[in-house]
Amino acid sequence: MNLKEKNIENILSLWTIVNTPFNANHNRENYSYCYLPFSDWPNRLWSWNYTPEVLDNAINEMRNGKESLKISSWEDNHDLFVSKGLEQRFQQTGMSLQLAERPVYEKRLRLTRVTNEEQAKQWIDTFTIPFGYRIHEDVVAQSCNKVPFYLVFLENALIGTALLHIEDGIAGIHSVGILPEVRRKGYAEEIMNILIDMAIDSNATHCVLQASAMGQGIYTRMGFTEDFLFTHYVLPANR
Image (cartoon, rainbow, N blue to C red):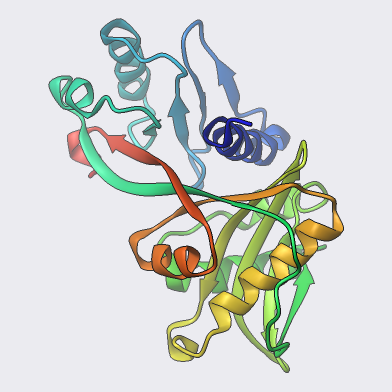
């Protein structure tokens, strides 16, 4: 199994699903993009085969009123992007875990799936604090019937968020965030273990994710392996 490809397919599927209610998915000859002018996410452009010509066309697309798009790449082509005047916005590490035995962990947290507009707003308000950008609540409210967004509670206190997107036996773990005042207590790792349990219940074979530098150490400790670098570029004015 090509876990790099499965990881990419999972995140592209997620982006596509959350944009579908807004008719915001667009396919060109050599690249695709999803764009919501009222939301900070997903707003991504991608191609399975970047060439200088494809990148020129993508940049022209961005300059046609879509300057906030980020171009995502999972190949070693940084020099090509820089040669076209693009700047690296951030980089993640694609990671995977083969599912076998259930994890053993302290059960202090409760995950509640978002099912309505009020919960969607709670999810967004909580997510924005650790991640530093805002997803429009309609994005969550309009797709929560297809995508499991979770509110994380410690007793009755809302302390974090998570998202689990399972497709074709691959469980994508996304948006795991904890409020700053309750960090360093093992809650992020407990959320991960709960999601892994859910993935096993759904007969997934692997979990995949895209790790920030902050979270990578936790995932490595839990047994995830590094598979590829996932880099996101912007036009210079949108760094």
